[in-house]
Amino acid sequence: MKHSTIRWLVTAACLSVLLFGCYSPGGPVPEDPLPPADRDPIPQKVIVEEVVLESPAPLENGVPPEPCNWIRFVRYRPETLDGQPKEVNAVLILLPGYMGGANEFEYMGRQLVSMAEAGGAGSIEVWTMDRRPNCLEDLRGANAAEDAGPLPDPALAVDYYYHGASIGGQTFGGFLQEWQVPYLSEFGLRLIMEDVYEVITAMVPNPADRSAAVFVGGHSLGTPLTGLFAGWDFDGDSGTLDDAGFRNCAGLVLLDGPVFYSDLERFNNITEAEYFQRVADIRSGVAPRLDMFTGVTPEAMNLLEILGLYAAAAPDAESTVLKNVAYSEDVEFLISLLHSKDVGNFLTGVPTAGDFRYTNEAALGVFMDDNFQPVMMLQASLGFLHGGAVVEKDFPGSLAGLLGLGGIDMDFLFIPWDAGPPYELGTGPLYSWVNFDQVGDAGDPNYMATDASTLYTTMTEEVTDIQDFARILYRGPSNFTEWYFPSRLRLDMGAAGSPFNVLAGLFWFHNAEVDVPVIAFGAPHGDVPDPSGWDEYRGSIASTDFTGIMCPGYNHLDINCAAVDRPSHRENLVFGPLLDFMLSRSGGTILVD
View (cartoon, one colour):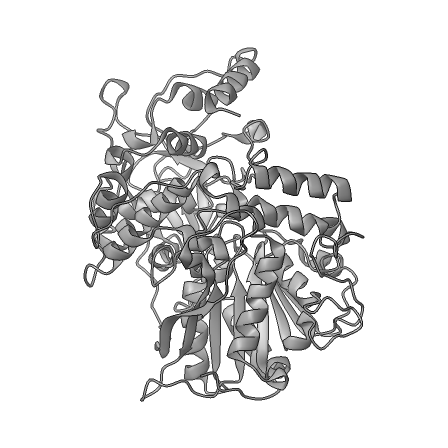
């Protein structure tokens, strides 16, 4: 549906109830932040490197670019004096969520490896995978910005993606369109399963080592993919089990994901005729080849990385991204969806997000923090705004479905509300960011308005350092997002548990013999139920060793990146139990060359 059509529908729906209002700046103002909490950093004892394995991409519907003939993952391994790998007790392979890349686990990978080395109870490696479509991303601009010096130079990225600048003799060719990627019709579930299996078997060739010390896990969408891997029949012969996923790992790790492999409704929701017709439509281009959340285009995901670069390079400088970057109408529409106070603000566009003055940290926080971002799958608990009026936000509210937005959380949702007087927009106060550990402490946990009229947040609801979050967006050889998410994957997942799955090349089986240790973490504002729902979450899985841990105050993205270095303020509720789980369930040591 075109953006103009959506706006017309919203207008028609709202005129009858006269929801229009005029912009009038002002409102309660957040109190001053507390001093930051004391840090107890984990000594970093980790080597980070990209590993590539040759594996030809499917050719049934066009020829993908050459980079797509490689499986890529980021390897976090213990630092050694000679730089060579050492024996470890466990290897954790992690699969990213919907529209996510390997860098979802950038903070987690570094910290888990370093924590293991510091603790002395054992050593681990963490491998974080990119799905195959990440091969289509042109990261030259972002990587050049990252590599510019001790601090990133985000202007290099902006010039490359928006101003035609050349890097290494290359200029940006634009974001790929549906018609340019016919081959993505073949980048489905089977390819992901085979890629994970190829990484495991190529890197750890001894089956006994795999079953003793390799753990497979994922975040969000990565959790059903983990479950599907556990029950995948890699030789297509249900009479042999040695090749099955669960026989090639020592345990499973589920990071705030909605389903496990026993949830048959998730994996059996389409008829045979419908499935094969949809495949044909995707191949021909009648149906979309890309599956994109409303407004979250490849450009929008790249712009998020640019926001992260700016927040890391100059956190307190005034942001220019929303004012000076010539982003597309699609991105403008997305920003309007996420940065509107009410229906009137959305429809009139007064003021726009670009009319507010933000520091670079605040510009990132206002789009990703759970008190400003309404979409649950995009939320992290990063802190709060400071420096000007901040008022309650009630958009999109009940209009979310009409706008194509799902998973909306309107609790404690706010928006800045001083962009200057209506006749001089852009002259309001400079909004800055209060980090998660400065909104309160044990003696005064609440972060209030200066007049005590509004409770904005509390220390129990804030867990992630905004600088840690900024770095996971761009740091290293990969990035946080997956620009081109193939619609074939969602289609295949709906047929994986169907009676015709083998005909579709989906060799998944629901088998009561699948019995490996499982640990699952849930965020109360994420994708799993409250503690009383763990039995339902487990379903009928065969595992007799299941641990479920809820993480109060966490949002969906916090599971991977809640700060680990301020335990006196907020203890990280994931990394310690996860490390203990792997070291206690490991059946030996392995040396990965």
